[in-house]
Image 1 (cartoon, rainbow, N blue to C red):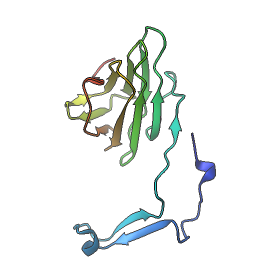
Image 2 (image 1 turned 60 degrees about the horizontal axis):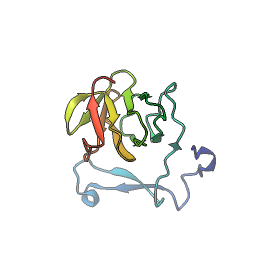
Image 3 (image 1 turned 120 degrees about the horizontal axis):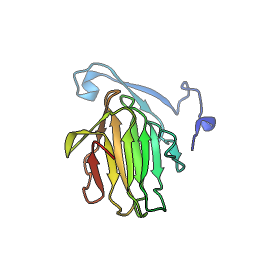
Length: 156
């Protein structure tokens, strides 16, 4: 679901804007750093209609419903955008496993290793994975992946 038509476009108001933290405030060594401030949360776009014929976007939240047939569902994920978070939600209670592969062989860095390009559900209850764009060729996976729910590989 896109929220673009509901966005307040002004950044000059008092409720939404950038806040500068200097080195003494942030405790870091990068100098002045801008932070987005004002909103209580960031609302991401959500899609529940992912298709095996169209790539999933590299941002927002994607729900992969799986398939009711005994065959597998293979989805493709667009290349990462550096600094952008992507959440994948799998409904793995269906009959066949759900695969999400990278579009051009981009790498998924995960606690299990470093050369993966495919995420496969293992037919357990609904589960989610967070990916972070590190470069245009590398996704970083948040820790906490359970091998009881997911398997990583280089092929579907």
